[in-house]
Figure 1 (cartoon, helix red, strand yellow):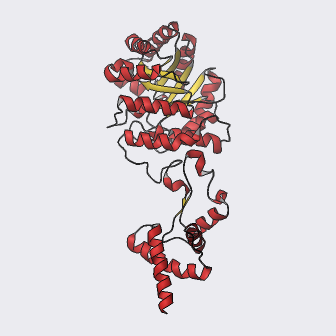
Figure 2 (figure 1 turned 180 degrees about the vertical axis):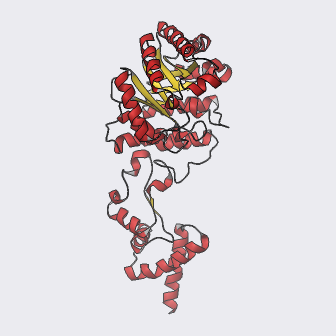
Figure 3 (figure 1 turned 60 degrees about the horizontal axis):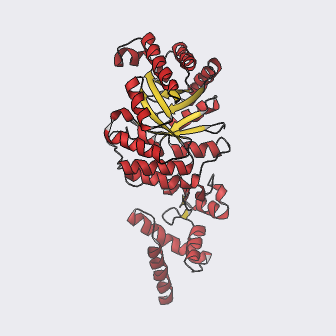
Length: 380
C-alpha cells in the first residue's frame, strides 16, 4: 500500500456479515469487494477462511479479482487458521486475541502470559510466509493499559505490522479514546488501527478521535453494519475525514450512495433510511421555509458539501413547513410563474392538505391545488 497519512480498512464482508441475521451470498460478496475497490479503500477484510465452505470460496474469488486493495483474512491465533488464509492467497492477515482480563479469564480461561505466547507464535508463522500482519487487541478499551502496551511491544518484536485497537463493546468516548491512543502511540512505535463499535452511538467519533491522537489506520463497514449496534460507518469516516478534519483524500465519494444502497438490500435491511447520515435521501431535502429559502439562495447555508459528492441530488420538498419561496421555485420548475400573493394563498391550501395526508405533497397534488385555485378565482 502506497505511503500516506491515513489508511481505510473495510470489514463489511467480515465484521459486517457478523451482524445477527445477515448473510451475503458469494456473488454479493464479490460485487461488494469490487465496489469497495472502485471507491479506493486501502484494504478489504474479506472473511474468515478457516470457516471453510462458501466462506473460503468467496475469499479465494475476491483474491482472484486482482483488485488494487490489499485483501486481508481474519484469524484466531492458530496456525490452522493462518494456513487456511494462506491457501486462499490473501496478502494480509488479522490475528485476533483478547487483551482484557474479563475476556482472558472468562472466555479463554487462560492467562496474560499464555495470550502473549499464542500471539507471538502466530505472528512469527505469518511473517515467515511473507504476510502483512495486523494483530488485534480484542476488548482493548477495557484492557489494563500497561498490559496492552506490553502486548503491542511484544507484537512488534515478533514482526507485526500494526495493532488493531478494538473498542469491542463501544464503551469509550472520544476524549478518553484520544488520551489512550496518544499514550499508546508514544509508548509503542507501531501503526495503530482504530476498530470501534457503536453501542453508545459514538463509533465514528471514537475512530476519528483515535486518528487525531496518532492512529494511522481505521476500519469501518458500509452503513455501519456489525455486531449489536454495528461499527463505525465507512461513508461517515470518509466524508468526516474530508470535511470535518479537512484531510486530502483520494477516495471516490460519488460511489458511496451506490454501495450503501446495495449493501443495505444485500443485508436484508431494505432501502437506506431517509435520515441516514451522508447517504440518506433527507441529507439534501429541504422543506422548512427558512431552510429551503436559504438553500435556494446559497446551498452552503444548510449543506456542508454538494449532494453530488456522494451521488445524491438536492430536493426542495413542499409540505406543512414550506414557505412561499420554495413554492414559487417548485412551480417555476413546473413551468408555472407564481406571484408572491398567489403563492401565499396557495400555501394555506398546501399546508392543510399536508396535515390531512400527514406527508409532503407530490407534484401532481400541487398542480391539482393550483388548478383548483385558478378555477376558484375564475368563478369569483
